[in-house]
Length: 232
Image (cartoon, rainbow, N blue to C red):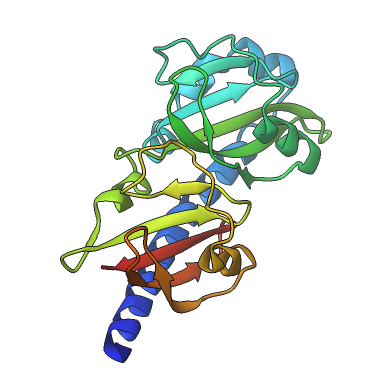
């Protein structure tokens, strides 16, 4: 078992490091683009779609990009197709938090209004030359199989092992054996409680069939999330 513990811990370290690197790449790209979009609000909003269309390199890192005005209305999307343009997201926590904290953030997971799929959003505020908020740029990452996060669902550890991911606020981000989108982490699970407190380790956890599985859990640096790697 000691060898299995070491192997699981190594897998968890590598996966957490890889996800951190990919999140950091996206944070940096969003922040860099935002720095190049310093202008007056009228200039930004009157040319919202052409401005977003120029961001092909940034778009390659995300499922979709959104340019949102200060009142919370989506002014442009990339890809342009779909029903996103004109939607009001002023009630969404990612929009409110970005406007309050005025910095690049990653959201809690949520179901998108235009596509009805589970996503997380990386958001960055846009300013004019006087540091007044003129808009918010958002990039979404799928939590299904079409992203670097979704790919973790199909990652096999040995013959029966698998990878999961949760948030310290209590959401399931990735779980290959759970169909429920954006489910809650189970209450009373000592592993989940420890991970949500920011702890790391390798432990035995009970399964539904009464047996136990060995689980390594590691915290991410770039988001308040944790990775679990389980056997069997």
